Length: 496
Length: 94
Image (cartoon, rainbow over all chains, first blue to last red; front, side, top):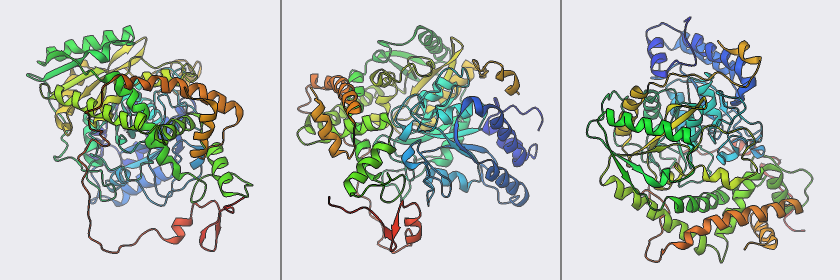
């Protein structure tokens, strides 16, 4: 038990130690709960920590589940708070759901519970997953454990920061336009968005239903494969879920001989920071060393993809968020004696600025007289974006890019400029429009902060994608861990 | 160009109440975002079929067999106000 470092331990290693009796579920859970107690005051990764329930359940696994243990028994797990959990308040980072206690559990989470994971708590996010910095939470901003003066990315910033800071072994997030991959990149961990439909969205509070997908945030590619294996699958409760037509394998590849890799020039055209570009170019050379062949390619509708996304996602959000009306659950404005007034005041007091902004854009884009000009045209652009990828993958196995054009940016530095925040998702958004699987892995540091490398594959190519990411992860050998820079005196007290 | 009265009209459709400051700020922000998304207007999209969804979505049937649903008690558990086993709301007309 002694010597386990929550900043370095992988789930695959923890699983082995548990199986061999080297560590108990209670000891492992205690390790993370102590780490949470030490660093959470600086990182603020969680909205709610379920310390007592986690400790009690871990003890139960140790004492009573000797023969009947699930495949993930005792692994301490964090869940993004837009996935509903029965009897555990699930806020989606919104004041409107501040005290909402769901009466059912999201399928992806249920599947993990069925394998006896220990849930450490519910992680922070931009309200309803709308944002790229986790500053739009109604409760608090999460800080990046590499430098607490910077953001962890978003919207799954709580899950990413928790894993990076050693406050969870691994975590679930959701990705609508980059919300798993970008925070994974900024926090120096692995984040994967599966093919659309691989994982059930039942119980994921809907943002943009045709784009949303749940996926893993982990310390290694192998862990991402293990977690994906257990959350994927068709679900009668989500008619858009189809599962994966194969068992997800924990990757072992060491070489990439003959793998054809495309580098889209549009993703590198503008706005990539020099330090990110340097790490990216070095990683391309590693791909070549591993035997992969590189080709420069064009995805000509990349900029239009961003524009289409900022119509389609708000349009779907404006419809999905219509359900929050103060009638059946959630916040209700007090003292209203008229129904419409109650709706308007409830929503105006319950939603934050970014959510209102997107509801307004979406409602405008869907309103009579503008529908064809905006939503209809955006759906046509979406077709072209998918056609671009289809044409590329007719000749290629993988497409690679930086995950984010910059490293973690300073807290508060982009909150006044929503459009600039949107532009930083250029490399991740087209992937969601086309429904493809993609993974971000850390490829080095720039200015002392992590840089993410994105690999994109054709639909349902998860095993090949994970294999390539694993081989590359080995070659990169990223071993740095966050030091809570900027926390001043507090650092000495919390470093294990 | 989107105007403040457009913004107020859309807010009414979206059941949002915006105060004067919010309406003014929102008008500027929406104008900038709409200006950016207008970029798709430069494409010739006449012959492109709109794509609502990446999967070839087919209708899913299941056996028409009764099974337990949400109980009334569970359905009302998070309700802000309850009366007579139902959701209590303010009156519908002014």
